[in-house]
Image (cartoon, rainbow, N blue to C red):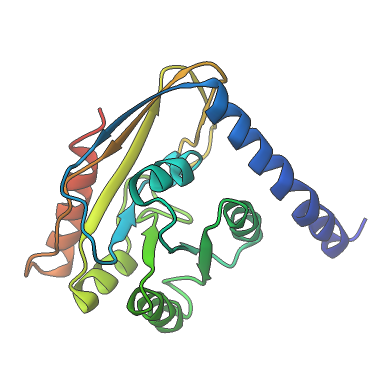
Length: 207
């Protein structure tokens, strides 16, 4: 089977299956939410680690209801699968890489924010290393003076993939604990210090 044909089949089959499994896991689990009371009313940046991506659509809906959101997703094939899955949860996407064609994808994300969308970013995606912080979240936050709001979740029982991000798949009938940290803005640090600050704020809760 040709690579293009195989990818076409997978991109058709995997999104509905993936969305179904996410819904099934969520519905069977017990849920607990620990959400900051200071969620901004204006558009903000949702930040979560790549390995904790799976249940984030539900946490966002809990926090913002039907508010518009677009997630920054790579143009790789796995990014296409993710984009099609999150679309089934009413989430748009901004496709592109902050390494290749960075200006274009960042501009598109900023346009979305100015149209009233929240922007979701995995600072360590799409290739890591785990818990690293790339340029995109720094650039958008500084340009738009936008709040960054950290999102996390933990599962009492889960499978963990042997991938760079140690991707977590909660087991059905486990307990999910969702966390939303205090919003923060980027101070006038240099870029390296800013990245360390974002990482610290994202790791200091949800333990």
